[in-house]
Length: 336
Image 1 (cartoon, rainbow, N blue to C red):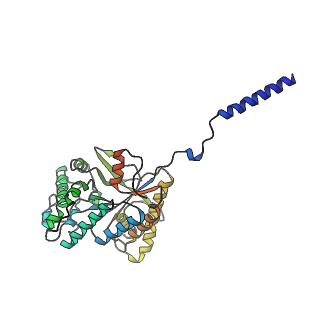
Image 2: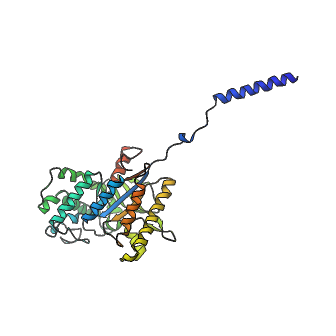
Image 3: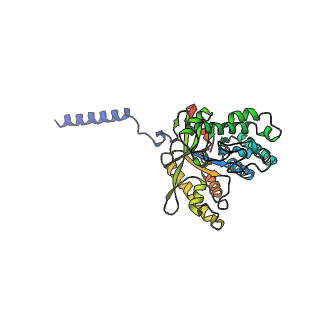
């Protein structure tokens, strides 16, 4: 009897070894699905000062980033040609943000637009006169968009500047994205955007980073609320909102270093949350105006210099993102 138990035990042990030999091997860490790349979307509104065009393009070259420039088309008109624009319900030659400083200033800005586009950046529209369109009708928005495209495509001719041979074709296809002045978006705007040929809008604000939805043919991006400051109070992730938070919208150059550090810490914390978590796209917005002695641009340069160079991060334009989404690709083809 004892021998029978020993044989049975041996047979069971042999069977266990045989089953183990044919069982699935343990999964290694390498077999786990790879995280998607972290997307960062950096944009600039108004796009006026030539020095800031040059500075932002230099930052892009250092970091491999692609930016979106939301251009106000009045900056493509000089004091002599300002009458070529009339906003909805406004007399000709009126603008909330002025016009180009001179014919040469307009020519220099057009050259920056051409250089930025050649380097892979996205040229979007910030309308023309920077008027608040919250009460505009669809027809008003369509009229403004008609001015945007007419002035952009004919900027050289309007100002009597020699036109590059490839300008018309580029200008006709360049503007696929829009951000409303003051972020004043509404039903009439969203009805007008697809009819005016825009593929995306970046006028929204969201509670935090989010995947932008596409509604009625328009992909809708939103600046997120991000924690900022000692109490981590939410603020829209844009330099102007930080400027109001930090100094009440007035210049306090003596505290510039403090504001730079606060802005950088807010940007980096928002990035780290997504980078370590779900990796939702993070959107940050800036202006060409150097608020609080350039504090927010200094923070941007430090931030981009750290994150955009990472192999698993893509600092891309809205155009890049929309193109990838529409093509059904899983990863962007440019960036870090």
